[in-house]
Image 1 (cartoon, rainbow, N blue to C red):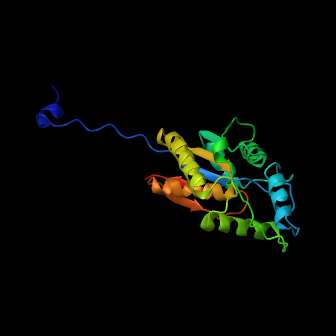
Image 2 (tube, rainbow, N blue to C red):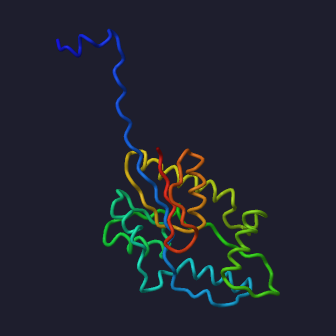
Image 3 (cartoon, helix red, strand yellow):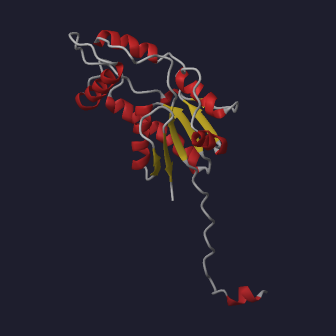
Length: 209
């Protein structure tokens, strides 16, 4: 019997095993697609524009930010949405590494208001479509806000399960849907440690302490 065991109080509980460290979750927006926004469009034309945008890959010649490349280099799991612009972004930051693709990560829809008398830039149409979708339930038979928030919570649960196993995960997906996933993660007790806004290649990072 050792001296340490003699000094330990009888019946003292054994220390609980250390809980594994939760990994970090990094949500990154894709790079710039190969579709110019320097146009003025009617609402009908914007629908066609958005449909094309959903199919496009990246504008050639882009370089993802070094800190995002670093997150991917150090992560255990890399995931992209199934849209081409997200897949090509994951390929760019992954530099040859394997990654999975999950349709739960695709962008929420952007059906524009039916305003045939006006022409606007795609950026303004996108803003107006999102406002009407968010506040007035304008979805025209596509995914509603309530449905998109439920999908975002599903995505957050998947990412949380990966991170809670101790693995760092990086997601290449879409600007607004990343916001919805981030809201779901905050509700689940995660803390946002990086928020870079909505620009292409921007990141939002979530950790537990």
